[in-house]
Length: 333
Image (cartoon, rainbow, N blue to C red; front, side):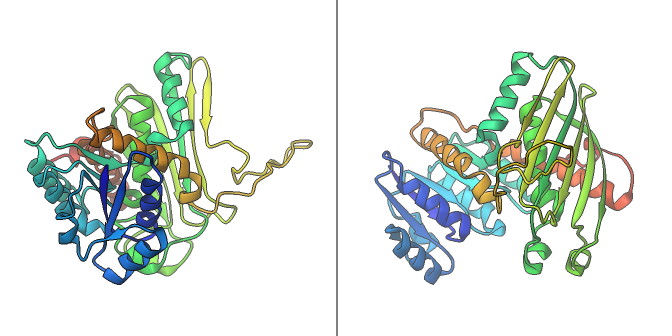
């Protein structure tokens, strides 16, 4: 299998390294709009470098992995589908809902598979939680509690173009709540706060947020987000049912400290960031993409899934701005 990768930033370089380690992958070709960066990545990893993004499509590929900047995603997905290349693209499909709908409409008639990168679906803990829900062992669900707490904020330049905390960060929680529960979200109510750097407010964003989601069967979910969790990277999901419950992310590296007498400290150290926390999930996700490329399995996360998570993020942003509950029907198009 010969795979191409467009975009050699941090996550792109990590994905290229993972791909070249699979026995089924004979070669990896990388490209970037910044050719010097692609050349440096190619030299570091020992993989081929295409002269340009356009040149990547002429490299005799079996599939394409897209880790370029968000504004490049729509064009690369469409170009890959038009070329008959199965494509894996990190979220989002596009920067906004109209752009996402345009891509879905453009590729809708094609049978070329597209897989969108929501790596939590491939994390062992989240998969076990989904299995527990499906088995019925939890009874009926009454509450889901999701957290994504970054240890430190991203640069101001990133925040200004990120789409906001709900679209950039919370979208992972929204997707995995749908995936684990097997339900759709009908209504949201969200609030946000700024107590850190001024550049969040300058970008119309918040550095901390909370949302209450009402699922279509009446189950309630809460999502808490922040850019300022100095204790470490903390991503968890509590799935609470009438008969039992499970927790994702409660491992030895969770940045939590009990103050109850006699309760030992977790050994740590805390995860410094998402790449370290989800490294096994990223590997499993890309292995699944090989099955998609080989025709052994359908895409496990299609563009329509990304659109649903985006709708929830959009509804949360409207709710935060207007300080009112928002039904998903209000933002669907």
